[in-house]
Length: 71
Image (cartoon, rainbow, N blue to C red; front, top):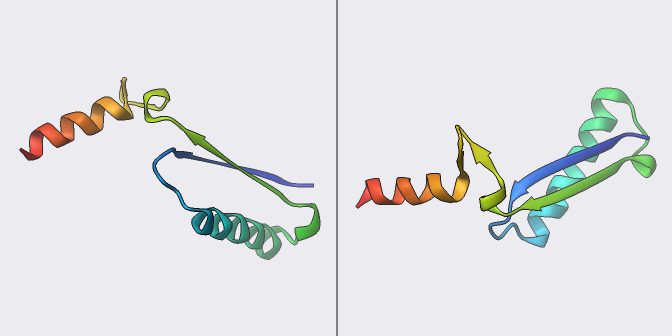
């Protein structure tokens, strides 16, 4: 009973995109590991950019800095 956890920033991922992620991850486990899709679980967690850090800063701050650089 495999479980895949996908984490993305909460920035407008559509229901259709989530469905594509679920279907694609499930199919990958079927193709690579021969897993049964009926017992394959895919969980998508959406994380606020304030709660996601890279290089010591939140994604919110990094994107704000990137926006300032483009001005």
